[in-house]
Amino acid sequence: QVQLVESGGGLVQPGGSLRLSCAASGRFSGIGTMAWYRQTPGSERELVASITRDGTTNYADSVKGRFTISRDNAKDTMYLQMNSLKPEDTAVYYCNAVAFYLSTRTTSNSWGQGTRVTVSS
Image (cartoon, rainbow, N blue to C red; front, side):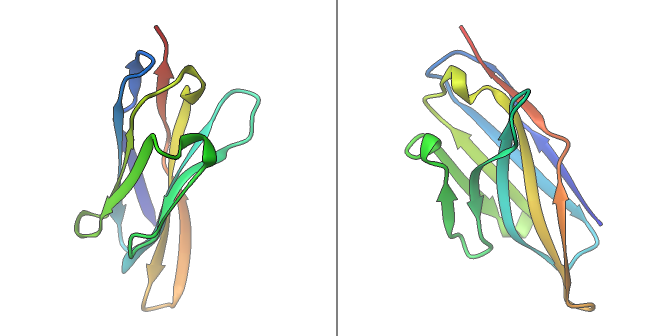
């Protein structure tokens, strides 16, 4: 099983920046694709950005040019640098990761508990 712990959320003014982190721990052979999702009340969880193990990234159109996803494979940790934040970025941000297990040739999909980001003056 994989445990994902997010950190870095908080309150920021419009135009400000925040950096989210997601650390994976547990018994696994490695972590494959990792991603950030976000969700607001009454809405479905939406993909913000994803990154493969070799560093290929994908972004939602709404955050392109403002957010940067990265990861440190040695630390099994993913980051989301959020710049030029807007009130519409306000949401709970969730970390998602796919772990793989070489001994059983299986994978697992895990979610973090979420970290709240509020963009408001």
